[in-house]
Image 1 (cartoon, rainbow, N blue to C red):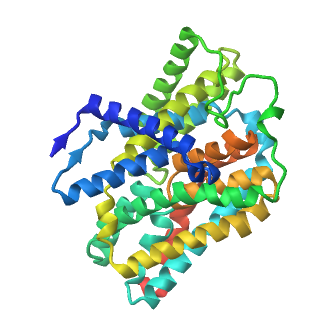
Image 2 (image 1 turned 135 degrees about the horizontal axis):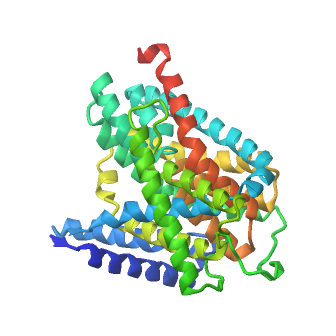
Image 3 (image 1 turned 120 degrees about the vertical axis):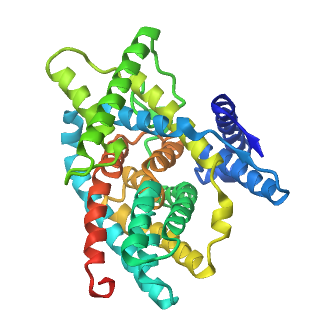
Length: 399
């Protein structure tokens, strides 16, 4: 057993990102199919650790930095969201929200139907549906415990975490190929046609941004306030009807900070610094999350459950191609949105952002996609998912 402490894990995560960049730069297949760099590097390390495990060699990472990095990323999403932009994207947000809700319903219908056909408990179909795929590890762990305590489903938490891990991996792998297929049908803005202004959003993380040490300190202060206040708000809401995941509270505080300071004329958030720090947090979070994946948990899945998850992956790809892309207008923005939908429809919002960055870094910016996906994927989806899950649990055969 090799134990890597905080610093060792940070070094490993940095090396994973460099490895991913090198792989994408040198392997045409990864570049052609828009595979995100953290996904490429992280999966190589996770597979290597799986092989080492067969020789009774184990590596344990200190993942204490993972949650703060995730929260910092969501804080930057909130700090980048001004009400004027949200108003402009209103119609797109509503449309995408409808599309996302449709996927939640279909995921659970497929999960329950296929689980029943394979002779599994229908509850396992829900676990391999929107609970873990659109909900992620946190939602899966919470509902897994509920299924064991209330419905007597054995090993529900373990199945939920394995399912969420499967989704995180596949969400980062299918988004790029889906976008590649769709982009062939649309006109792309191109990198040469970008506006002469310095980039401020998350679309092209490798573009240079003029920043200063003091402005970075100001932005770090805003992120810290968002983290602290969001965490306090999360604690206050626990156990109430308004309880929300911690990252949603942090994002919400970031939105209020950005727009409140601007409205009163106290301070104007520098989006360039916000996007730089957000991209750093996102990359390191994904690197740690992917390199510390326990792929052997997936190997332990029973064949019927694995078939169920494979069917959900196919559903996500087809849904993005034939529903998301068409409903969102069959444009370049719609193609980027479809890649993002694959990311959080199977995995998590950070995966969705990484998917979209892999596309926009090559084909040009998509302001609509980077406005809509974070707000829907990070805020609305958790609220709607709870409602959809409870509606399914109210069906007669779950009583």
